[in-house]
Amino acid sequence: MKKTGFCITLFLSVVFLFSATLEVYADTKMLKPMRIKPTYRTAPASVRKVFTIKGGDVYNFAKTQGFGFNARKNDATSHCSMRASDAIVLVAGSSVLGSKCDFTLFSGKQINPEWKFVSYSADASDSCFPPGGAYTINERPKAGGRIMRFRIHIWTEALNGLGCGYAIRTIRLEGPANGQWQDAFR
Image 1 (cartoon, one colour):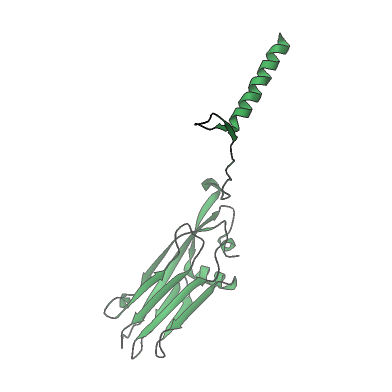
Image 2 (cartoon, one colour):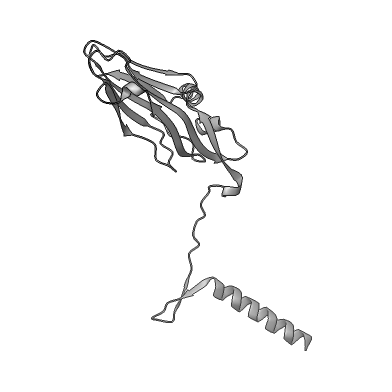
């Protein structure tokens, strides 16, 4: 009796195991093997962390890792500059004919696959609004993406004594909780 009970238990466990790996065609009553779906390799939220980094720190480190930064004049009289302090500061300076500048930040590379862009905070100087000047963000990183590229156009009107400044204060990245934010750019 014990042997029969063991055989029935073994038979049922094999049947249930086999049936768990097969799927029935609804219209033909035939069995087909199920495909195992691949798993996503990003760590669960419990082992991830959002890092808030000063714009200037990100700029200085990313430059050393091969990310591109460029301030381009649109005419010979424009005064365009990019610098890092606590923030990444982009300036279209004052000139007799005004300034027109295109800035590209974080070009040429993506952050590492374990990392995602979350958001950024920025502001513009008071002189950066019409009629003295203005700015247009032509491209910005997408939340959840790996491309960090910004393309920003800044211009000032003639004889605007203050110029126009735009500052990226902080950048937020999500990555492994036990990592350092610099790992995103290595």
